[in-house]
Figure 1 (cartoon, helix red, strand yellow):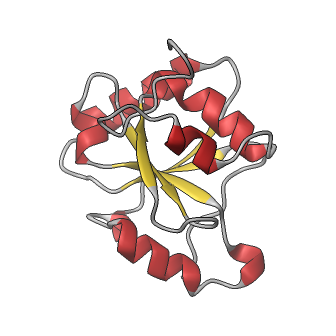
Figure 2: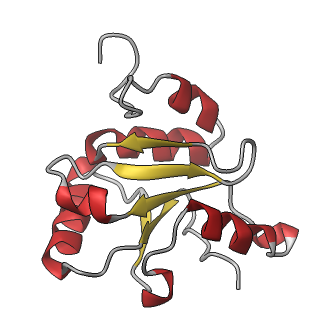
Length: 140
């Protein structure tokens, strides 16, 4: 079964941690507060509980070509526990399996630019700090 398709002009935020519903709601509220426009298609489906990068890559590679998506952002245990809600960005297309973290603060910018192909996944991944987290370009 392919990954869910994101709504038009949004990227997919996939919940993989189901131990704390309040933390998921807090992350959703942070996404809503991060931008005036919807930028995330949020999916909370228990079939993705505990799904890791390799499982998602396998699922996506089995999908029909017109059903594949380019990237997914995981709401995993780290994203739900941290105050910045650092989602795990996963490349599913150009360099499958490449990842970086993105605090919700930066998510709308990344989502918009990836959606309209203004920038690509690698540009953000290459700008991640030594911890593997994107915190803006330059002095950001």
